[in-house]
Length: 101
Image 1 (cartoon, one colour):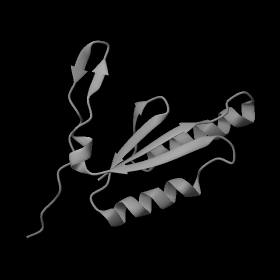
Image 2 (cartoon, helix red, strand yellow; image 1 turned 60 degrees about the vertical axis):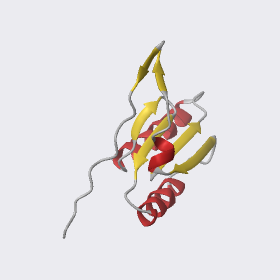
Image 3 (cartoon, one colour; image 1 turned 180 degrees about the vertical axis):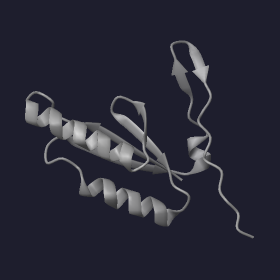
Image 4 (cartoon, one colour; image 1 turned 120 degrees about the vertical axis):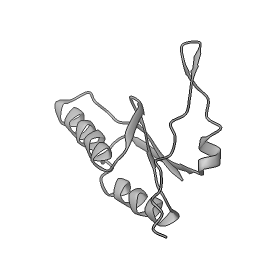
């Protein structure tokens, strides 16, 4: 499963910029990668892991601004088409899972 965080945070004052930067850093510390400036994504191996990360993101959402969280399955994520200019880019693969047995 994949978790996406979309946000639009105010950055007009120094305090707002600091809060927005702290939010982005916390996303990176939690294993998210930046897809675009205000779009971060993270792979979660299970629904339980997804719930943990969603709860964690909710805990550090700034008091102002708009934040949206979206979860999609691996199959749905595989249907994403990324374009850099006119060229299509392949979708990042999910990290491999370790099998214990």
